[in-house]
Amino acid sequence: MGCAWCRDTGDYNGQPCPSCCGGLPLLARIKAAQRLREISLDRLPPSSREMIVAQLIRRRTIENPIKIAEISAKTGLHEREVKDIVRTLRSVYLLPVASSRSRPAGYYWARSWDEWEPYVRQFRGQALDEMRTIYRVTKANWPDFVGQLKFDFDVES
Image 1: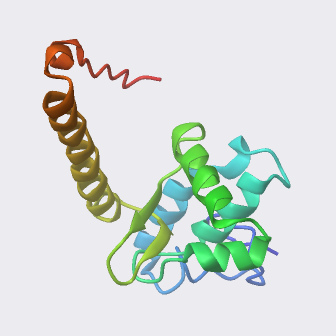
Image 2 (image 1 turned 180 degrees about the horizontal axis):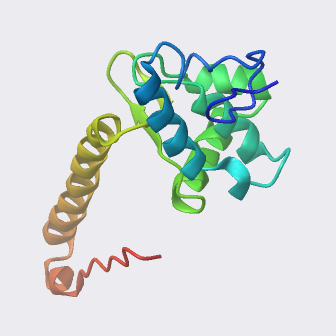
């Protein structure tokens, strides 16, 4: 029987799951459960690799993330497959799967902006660094083509 509050599919015997609802004051528990219901896993195909990985991550918090190696061990998926699935969970299903490279490192389910923002800050910097590197390498090796560099971003797709 899953969590009675947020419908997480873990076995909690009708009690609030410890990863999102357990230990919170009643009002905070209700708000957390409402938010998690809005971010439903119903969008995912049942019994899919995406569903399995999402369920493992959904139980994790910013304080207790899950490492890729642990997901691989529990699912039999190669670490590269896990990374691809996480990208799909974010880009196709728009699920709040965040990650941290600093301790504790791993994937976690962002339950608030305060948990999502460190991920945004970290990966925004990485993306900007990659774009700067592309520009500088192009300029150093093919200076005549620097003007042809164009970075198109479609934020709605």
